[in-house]
Length: 270
Image (cartoon, rainbow, N blue to C red; front, side, top):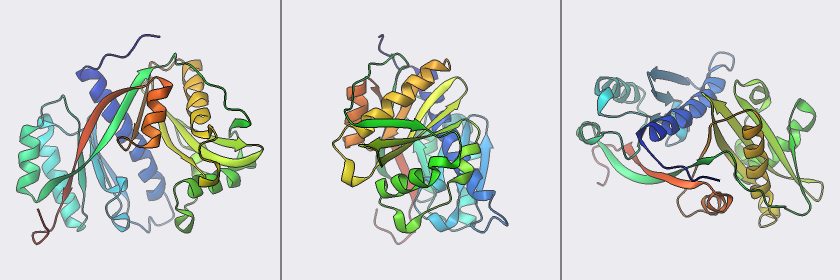
């Protein structure tokens, strides 16, 4: 196994992959009859901006992949968020030039409000046995209800359950259900685009944590990505979170910690 050495191309590919997956999620929301949430996606070359006003400060109101090379596009997105009175956010990854972009964001009331870690690694990564844990890749709706339960319980969002039926047919998506001693315990998504793989949205029901379910979901998705010829594996997580530590144990390396810049109202602190 050879460690992945970061370069500008890798950073740009990672941001395009993260934005591509988030964009596909918002497109699914926008495809609901009548688009009741007013969701939309705008693409600018390798950059993408998402908007779904009812979600507030959420990935669905976020811009990915913008740099100093796309200032006019960034201005358009800033106006797009302001038009809907959305507290939009820009993810800024280290590496590509961004000083002018940050100055532009500051001028329009955006402030640096947080960080998020991005991980990357080769597809040939070691696996670790998780006794009592089985991972199923969903091929139809047979296990979809169990997947939905595990997903929403894992994200502590059972009261905000969203329809997951369209996810089965979403381009580039594969859904996985983790079973612990035969019971639905975790859910995760593998997203493939441009020859790269993104380990997305892994969640474990709190009742089954520390049983190896998260690691088993990582292992299965990485193995499947390798089987279809993916070049590299990417993922993201809150820095220092349990998910982040599991990725490091798996063999993924920290690619970057990206800055989150969020629009604040004029009377807001900072």
